[in-house]
Length: 487
Picture 1 (spheres, one colour):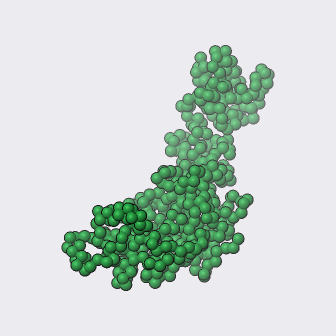
Picture 2 (cartoon, one colour):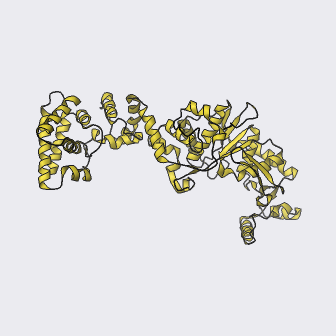
């Protein structure tokens, strides 16, 4: 497969998120593809905050975007905020008006709605009839006297607009389908299609890599650039991120499932998320699934980005995260899970670091996310747990006879463990096996009976590790509690 060629060595790309909420997985993928492309070509990656929608943009959302990108390790070379560049856009708007390539539209919201209704009845591809193009000077003065605040619309050409796309190929857009787009709102704030293409030119952006949801904006931006005689960047539209039913992954339908920071809070590693997001629409071959950041930079190529949507597979993300967690040593894993124990109120200053690391070591490769440490280990920190009803029914039994046998096993195990002089894993294991083998008790039955008594569950780390980590006094106390429960 041939790599996309660049015109020169000065590759400059950008991401332009709107600070109106959290960073979407799709937005993270756009940022990553741009960043990888820039790094691959020794170019620049620019972060450009599109906050021209003043009603919805917030500083909190802007900070959340920054935090999410930094967590992923996506750093930017320059940063711009579009609301601070108003004077630049005003200059270009004036140029469009003076050249006759844009005009003021004085229609009220009610009039625009009436025009839309009539357009639908006429089955017109446009929802605006361009009446603002033909206003007389008398009408304009009358509207001004009425206090109407106009917006500004671009005059779309009456000839086809050619869109060349590095991923989707080339096509001609029928001018009959194009609106005279509003490029400046009636409050004077410029719209996305104007600010985007103006900034691309001002910042000498060479490649615009973005999601296919922006594909309809591209001919409008090309028309604005042509009217201003601006150099066009190369466009590359990457496929949508879909759920497992084929529907676009969106904030409205999927909530915080699409929020990058959700995964940070749940204990995913940035390396896993970065690897996962890179594979949403891009592939190197049919074999390799796991890539380091350096490998992604080396191998990333727009020619290997697919044209069809890519499915967000949470199971694959979990698998990747588990892989990266298991690459960490016990000390690093302990550092990572401590905040989750603290959030649950389980950890206090009396807990020794060595004991915490032994717990993490006992859990082993059972963590899919760091948040999983809570259900896996809660019982080490508190005895305020219930006995799992299904586990109790299976291993402790429901009949009086079975309960009596369970009490007998727990009583005997308690007596044996009480007499153990050295409370370590090897001694504990040897003593329990000696008891089960001499009394013809199935090992699994004895182990699960004791495990439920000590943890409330029928699964988890090695039982012998649990016994040793809880310590003799706590083990004997919990065994007695279970015996009392069975009476």
